[in-house]
Image 1 (cartoon, rainbow, N blue to C red):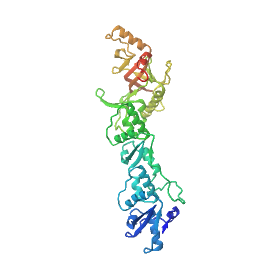
Image 2: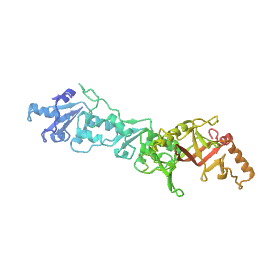
Image 3: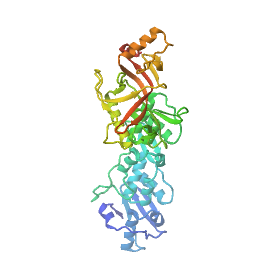
Image 4: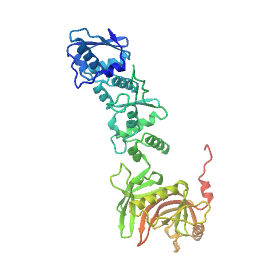
Length: 442
């Protein structure tokens, strides 16, 4: 005799701490069109469950020697075949994300606590683009790589081993709702495979900046913050002259949590940086700022930043002030009053020194010719000397790309952030900018 699997029947029997089914007795379960016969020992191996409660109730009402009704459930027999193997003591592992969600849904529907826990802690199955992935959860054990898209995303579908379809009204429920297999169709499976390769600890050759941008874009999408910090453009080296480790990093990639400072002497602090989740110790910061977003006024020796660079530099100065305990005191920069048509915003003090590499209008400039120097170099021919003077007398230099060492000079009543030029590629003529243009399609 068959019985219907109404939810009210399932919830009417209280859960027991341990199954009392006779181990040697065989019980019949029909799933869809197929009949399964399982021993009491198999059913009790993952209990309390829907099966153990149903048959325990039959034995309680009719006695052990009475005829026990066949339990009928209108579910997929192929999925239950794996569940039966689990109950018989075999390890069950889904082949893909579709099989995973069916097995997980039925494990919850039948309230099989051990199988639910096993699946909840198993590998993550997901489709990304056209590729299918089986991801070990411990691959996200690196600093900053968890929680992420996968651990948080799976929690939405499979919230907790102890919750059965959380939030669902189960009154009169005959079967659970369908769960769509987890997939991300609008990302590249090939790019994600490369991210997994990196997460497993293998090196990956970055082919070009476009390739790096693809990796970083998906790192951010999947919230792999530690891996992102390893992939951002940077260069770390030890400077034997200064006896300090240095990191070159772009302004766009600086994170407030990595900003530090180190005292040089009683009146100067070096700004240092450690990539979050990656660097154990900070390095002297050399900040790279490109995109022609820097204007230098060589008469006042100040720099003004344009567009997003202006906001990012202002924010960085505030972070540095907070790190040094100067927040709320005199700002580390001041509003500029230079009358250049393309400038505006905050003005930062700049400095050139003997170690600065300066490329002016495509030509390397000697230190003796730097802005602010009054001595003339006798090594240069008069024509070249005159040309350099004319280029510098304009007062304004546009920085195509620049690298700056950051220090904070402190006085009795004030402190100022100073950008010391390490390497600058600048121009004063639009013709120089036009020279670097390329024709479309070339």
